[in-house]
Length: 254
Image (cartoon, rainbow, N blue to C red; front, side, top):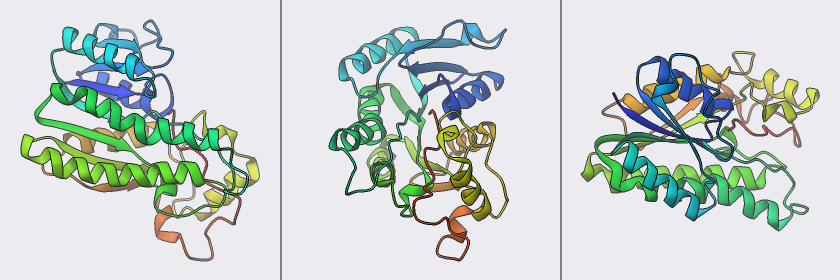
């Protein structure tokens, strides 16, 4: 039975990943700021360790890592999913919003990975969750885009540095996903994005979770960037791309 650590596991994509892992028979360490130990599907609760952890708080991560080592002994898969979205054009984006987004979306995965590295042995896997805006520019998404672009670079460095240890690192890039966070989009902005997606719809959380779990188990994949966006990246630069100001907004819990 493999042990998976999932950040941002209380809702959205993180929750979908955790539930998929449980259905597959593995064990989940669910990290979130407000864990709900009782809120997991019947019959699976004995394989869930729900811990309070804030990816921006080194002390809480240190404590979580201590408990994980004590209770689990090792980590087979780490899914860095926790995320924060705060929009705003560069000229008006508050510095505190920029700092908060980078701290959660980029520094957070770095610190979680560093804390758990001693528990990641040969054959272990790291899956970071990015976003389409990390590869293409959307007006009004400076902080989120920068954080996700940085996560792409971090993933590839991890892939190279950890390969001698037999640890893999990959990046999954969702497009528009039906989550609590993306419900913040206006109906007009959402429709513009949907109109630009060749498959003509947003993804379900479970569809992203399916790919994350597959990537985590792909034994000869490392340093890969894997879009799961319904073809959205393929359309950018064409006449169907979202107009300025539409933005993609967040793509998960995340």
